[in-house]
Image 1 (tube, rainbow, N blue to C red):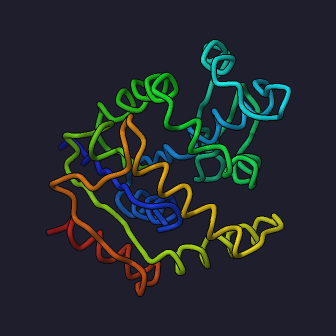
Image 2 (image 1 turned 180 degrees about the horizontal axis):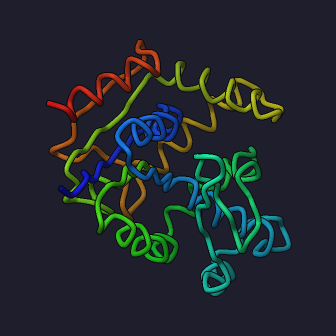
Length: 223
């Protein structure tokens, strides 16, 4: 029997990736963090495609997409993102990448570049993908769709603690402002905006622990 395809969408810092990893492990699925792919392209842009003001030169990035090879490698059960054979899993979590990823991710050229590879990975089934447009654009025929949301204050706290745990300096108010800006850009962009699929199950995990969120999702899948 073909294993299910599961789409998990939602706002930044609702725990999409970490929750998807646990569910993948429990159900024997492959987890694909699509946000990491967009962060990978952003990291490449910051290294190779800046203009004289230090901003991302989008035209240069578009013409350089054929130089980007992104792949996930299994490292002790953890899928680690590699860019052109280099492990960039820590670099893509920096504030500089967070500040630029929404701009890069809303570009049609970048989304088209990553879209087909994501769909190809899902064709065989047995995959859980998280992002912002998985249930609406990338995998509209997924077997299960979930949409995660939480209050801005709770998401700020989670993101701030995540940065500290990675050894990255952070200012809590700045983290909050960054999340608000990203929410606005992600929700209002013309290409594949962040929105809930009509047939998605919405889970507000403001007052739920990670474990409780996982149990809620698993109970829906098993039912």
